[in-house]
Image 1 (cartoon, rainbow, N blue to C red):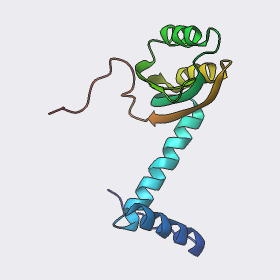
Image 2: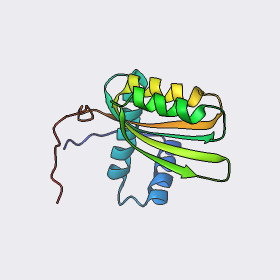
Image 3: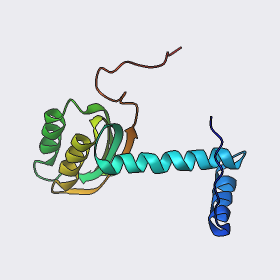
Length: 147
């Protein structure tokens, strides 16, 4: 580890202290490291390059004409990105799907945009987690053991 001295204004330090208290950080160094990681992760995601893991969550009208078939075809057409899916019946006419995706950021975003744009998909959101190490590519080496 390297020690870095940074000067922060009082308002920013108060915001960091508030985050520390809310999340239960033991010290400022841990909080600032996590905030820096989050900012770097967001910056990598904004470039659209590199690998990622993601969760695509969307809510749709399951009775909408042909929608289930279109969504199934979209997932099959992008099977290389799909890791797993969870289907939930929210009420008599509404379903939620959570799809775990893995691949290149641009391809994952493109697929998510396509699904969310389908007619009768009511709400959709992509939670994207960039991977700086590149270990999200299909078939990549698995860097840790599972006991």
